[in-house]
Length: 222
Image (cartoon, rainbow, N blue to C red; front, top):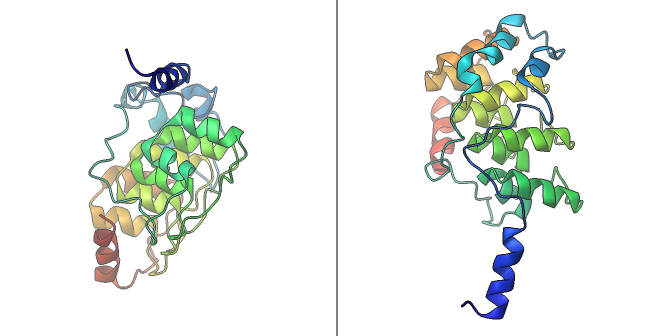
């Protein structure tokens, strides 16, 4: 039998809501996919991108990818607030508990990233939805000038990218090297993401600079 303290800890943890990586909650809290389809989308989002939410592939989408091979969420100084960690790992029940404790939802780590940046980086659309519903800034910029949708595109996380678009992400926001999500999708060869971004108003006339520098910055985070 475990020592009393360990047993108490085990009993306490068992009473908390458990994160189920195989359960895909609705794209918005307490909403169905039909609700998402009927939303008034920002940035003149045309119907085609909304219709993609009704495809069978979205309803049966696999659980978020494992985060072991994703870019490192570590901040410049190596320290992360607890809400950032929970968001990066997609621990939706923990994210909700922490927010109920009035933790600052838009707190930036030393790299300038908010919890929403890390949820987008890891492709956790459900965690991103909780954060957005509780007041996360969808267009917050980190120290590289990247918004959450930049990171969603970098990881080719289609569901997360579309959630961010629906919630008002600026698809033409440029980072410190003038890279928009259009440039990221083009560099990654990601056709589905590029299509969604163009349907949401992505600008093809914008020019990025320092392509190799941007690539090195990406690799330095992995």
